[in-house]
Image 1 (cartoon, rainbow, N blue to C red):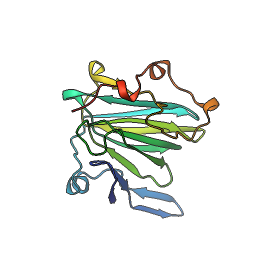
Image 2: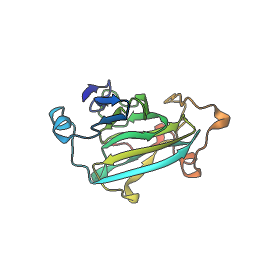
Image 3: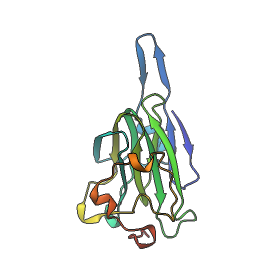
Length: 182
């Protein structure tokens, strides 16, 4: 595994070593010792998986307070544009975001520390998205930011007419009105 720091403190891109031959491929998708050596927490308590079709945008979601979640995310099948936004009020990169293409070919992963809003857009006909969480889901601690907030200026790589967004996500507040994380 190769672990690369991003320009957002605490967020890492993880490139697995893939062994391929005429039968297919093999790779380690998780090795706690390698993550820990690179400062990535490995105390995951919940695994989640979603299936979505092309154009679906999920997010931007996060949990706050004692229930803030770190996430280790990857795509099992298909391709997504994964987006994280730093919402830590005291961070030098507060309000900044990065976008990473995750797919079933390169098999890279993204570690998202607590204090980030997270979302993704499905770029392939469908995608299975998997993530490990450092905290259980707590609906009372769940918050979000409107995915297309002009202040954030995120390019979701999906034409506006092809976007599929839940009613819940359409009602999320703008970045300047979200629930900040200290």
